[in-house]
Image (cartoon, rainbow, N blue to C red; front, side, top):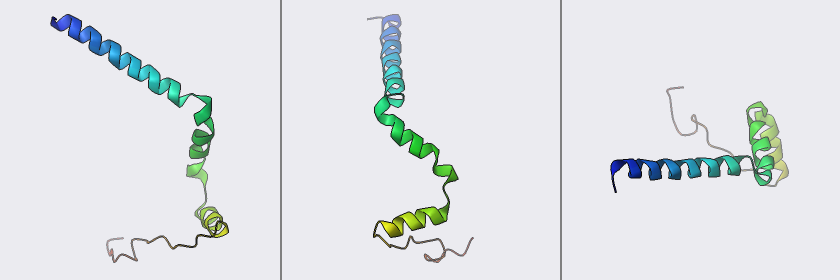
Length: 72
């Protein structure tokens, strides 16, 4: 097998992997998850705390100040 054949096979495998990722990302099963993730930058921290309180989990998330980080 010469280098040209090896490069061709490698290119074909990378193209198949790329197409697999594209089909996975645009599949209808993933749409709900990606729509939810796209709204995360606009989520308010208070909304997240309220939703955690409603779910019954009231764990406090440790902050940098709780861990003794004085650099902030």
